[in-house]
Picture 1 (cartoon, helix red, strand yellow):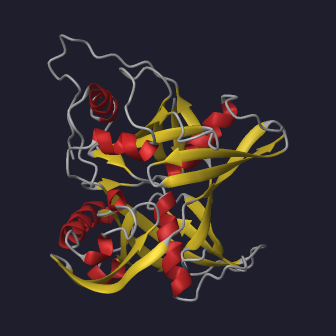
Picture 2: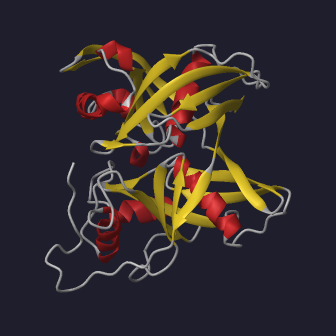
Length: 344
């Protein structure tokens, strides 16, 4: 089943994987699928990874394709588990995918939902347990709110050298590790016309931070390493609208090896919220939200809803997901291209 959340694809594989994935938890299954000693998502050559490459690479996918394998949850407290994947391997978190999975689980009848009201879909992902609250009106799904694992600021103002100049970069952990900076700091802007430059700068920043202590997760080394680089533009706050005041930013996340998120990035929105909360711009009382616009103009609404005992913020991200297709893919044994290729 194919969905998109705010323009970013999410390809759901609910059945048909070869064999049984070993591991007692979703995090363990992801670790087993990775090459020994890696935390950044580089995969082993396995039958399961053959499926990932086939569904993600061209001609069945593209360089920015994204999806997930539905797997058993860690325990009965969740409805399902998921292994997120992209062209370079397996990620630890995915907010837009969690929203899509919640909508799919309700629309497919896997999780019962009222015609009017909300249904909570609990999902185990490699970074922990997350929830998608799926909203229904008149028997139709109209959106979902993603509750992430706690998000924490790891470092502020790390000077990073790039071919576009030097920029001060902030680091936050929000299920995945994100480096964050103003696009203007490098003379860039979050617009499609600067797409190639944003990819180049994102790759350079990720490489520069590879050995920095801030990118090491304080509790789980499997969550370490920069997953995405978030560039943001500050936009005028909307006026004359009902509801809470909003900080308005346009962002793009360059993740894995040069992939570009078409949505505002769900777990990346949590990272932005952690930084904005630390700056005193987003409080926990709901009086100010983050209106988070993507490079293609789609939007998420982000909120800080609390702070845990360790000082990490609890965040919620609201967005829409829509089904785009149902597919049956085949791999012809005589096809010389095999599982395909990636052309950036």
